[in-house]
Image 1 (spheres, rainbow, N blue to C red):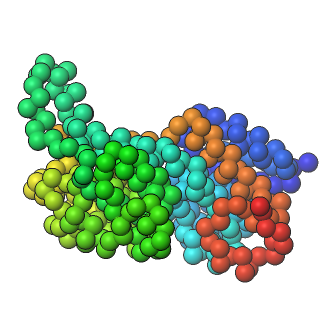
Image 2: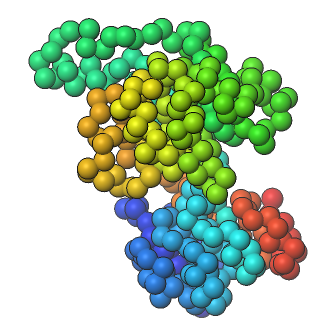
Image 3: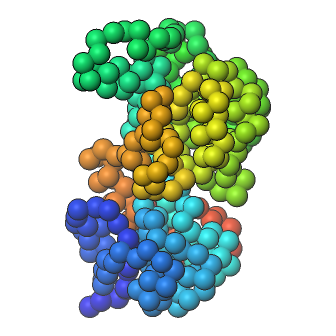
Length: 332
């Protein structure tokens, strides 16, 4: 007998088998749709007990129309698609998965760093055009002894710090929420954002996107950076003010950028970044491996199962909602 209606608001996956297998533990009527607008989400989800969400907008307007929803589970770490405050006010748990792609994103960030530093993409392109000349990449500097600055110092940048240090890079970080002793254990110095911008040869962005971080890397920060510096972003595009980034690159305030995310995805084909030789752009792929995708899908579905079974999920974003709910047993 069907007990619950669960709606997947949107997804890019070729199969939903992992979610179905996990949700089969309880009676679930699983509905998968491809919503893009608030109106489409409301129409598909107004009577749902739970939502699984990738990119569709779960705004206050949407949340106010949800009649039965107990949990909104996001496929991913970031929850910028969801109005957390509105969900909390309505007693809806918001969950994510914070630990599914630590290796993948830290690996990808370092791949972008070393590709930019060694100008791998540029040189490859020139060779394929018939140009066999190392001078195309001049100047290239030795990695060892240079400074990697991390904007944000959570699990992913902490993993990246260890990998970068193995190549002889000095690592510094900006994160007002991380205790000094956590950084010291990893031989990482905590600095202000301005100090970080001044001393770093590579700046890798790992801050979540929210009202405080949107556009936090802008004109003022680019003005402080070294002309030889590269900026790397595997977090969210809007953490960097894209107009300021384009301006800094055009005015040669920085050496280049290597980014996996942009403000508008998919990227607009008339975006100036696409025409710059000193910019590497990937299509928001840093999170991906076959193993990470499987883990993400299962853990997202498990968050829904936990809540509908009367438990708080392992991964909960809006902890203050606990005061509004009568879920007596915490999940281990």
